[in-house]
Length: 216
Image (cartoon, rainbow, N blue to C red; front, side, top):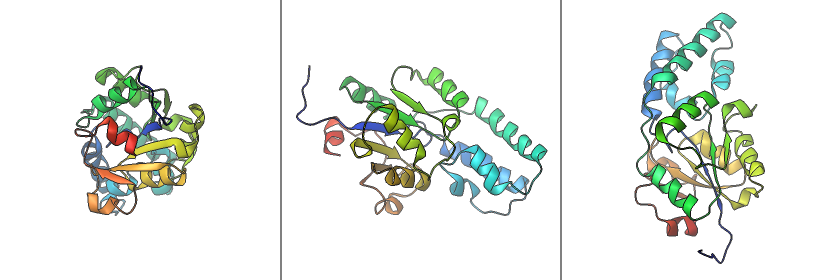
């Protein structure tokens, strides 16, 4: 058994753009949807990254009928049922490594339970996470810190003892406002745009070691 001189920090992972490489796939759907629905917003997918579907509907579709919003919800749900879920390079291996070293691990995502359940089955992620915070459990999505604070509460740890892995600006702000250290992945946004917002920037998890984690 390995004994560490200091307490291991808890690892909290965003999902899309961190554990799975799905942001480009979502970009296709939401940018196309913005055009079809006549929102008149360029790069719509970039603006909403990290937010929940209820937030998107409330903020950008409030002027539409309830029937129309239900149609958008159905289209999004159907899209998620068949969309590919490729793992981010090195992500699952890194999570398994942390698990083997006794690190508490949480998944904190704006996706709903149905999508996460499908991903867990496809990627064999069962038993890797000690808590799951999905859109179904929160009333305020990212950039609000509610989701990360809930994960810390689930695991009975202080926010300052958590390391957050995020890719979106909304997610990064959520982790920082929760009082946690944030490691930014340049999978969605250029590394240069993240450097002044996070503790450190990494391209993915392929070359990240456990020593790196201890240093963070």
